[in-house]
Image (tube, rainbow, N blue to C red; front, side, top):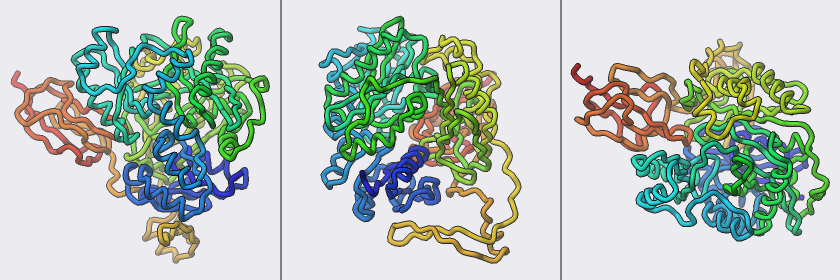
Length: 586
């Protein structure tokens, strides 16, 4: 087993891996951006190294900075978490070329399965079929139009080197093809540092079912049941369950065996997930995620297996301690992703900012995996996952009831969250009856009146005399305790003040007066109009990227564009007026 592991990630997953390492007696090394200097994963790690920069590209996607931290820390292994470099073969190879273990599959397997197009080919080569789609990168909008003529609409455009809904756009008609392709490429580049895309037929009402596999370096591979991740918005999961319910056990077993077949066919080792779409008694291969999934805790709760521990043991060369016959599924588990987003009646608007209060639930069968504490800040530059609430029950109905109870206990203030929408999902009769699909949240679920409240910031507590100060020496972080006079503590904000990054603001957009404001902090990635253009209410004016998600900012009235106050690449704060429209004459 390793003695020192560097975690090349941030937030909830970095915290999860650090905790698993500590339980195994492994020294942990964190890396951090300028904005994450005081982050929870940094506070929990034994050592921490600065990467510099604010954005993901400047920090967590900075290969040289991470390699330097590996060298300086003497880490024997690197756990990539999920997102960022977790499915990047070049990064994995750069790690292994230095004689450092990569806690994940070999680079060759990532190259095959991390590229969704070659992954489709690899699955087909071992007899596992997917939905109709392309096996070459899409490079021109004419290819999308031709595919639409052959297979019909809608069409899903996807990032070839990504997952989790990032860089995925649905094309409902030929008129949307060009803008969807452009948006998908921008998102893919921002989140995965690669902008290659492909496309496939978009099924009407499928369920999203996935198979968790784990393979060692000695030829053994098993699957740990299934998960249903059908409750989604913007093709990103809100609610995940294990096992997938109300599907013929024979079909679930066939999915599991297909997952193992795909993994073994590409020489896969470590943890991975094979995703399928299920509809009308048939399942289709979708893709393979060559990493640990966000929703792995539900599998852990129904199998009793610590997946991160298994990842570490497999990466260190150990043999899997059980066979397929030893895997038992007990009860039902549900995971709720708590995102810093305002449901906003279905708009799901990112809500970055400081967390002023965080009270997590507890009780039998209740687990919280979080990346933040009260006083920490959700930055616009990173994913907006605050944490994951995971509940186990003896059956699905008990798990749903326990999850509702736990969500009602959860208190988060300072940022809006998806909790109100999560409760609406869990309380709906369609969800209870397993009558939902991947499009159900956006097409059926009525979120009228459902919005996330940020909550009022509490009054400051009495200032603390003892202060914890972070000192950085040659890029390595040290925590130092020091006592200061009460007046000095008050002057510096005290321990009760939230940690905030420069430029954080809050505010809302105006409505109906022609002064179009952005609803949240972010970056303008596209300006779609020019001064003098005539627009109708609802037309897209600019595209705002916040928390790696693109949001179309639309005209609130019909009229003529009189002012454009931003340009592409500009940073804006919530409430900033970006376009002014002169109303059309009645």
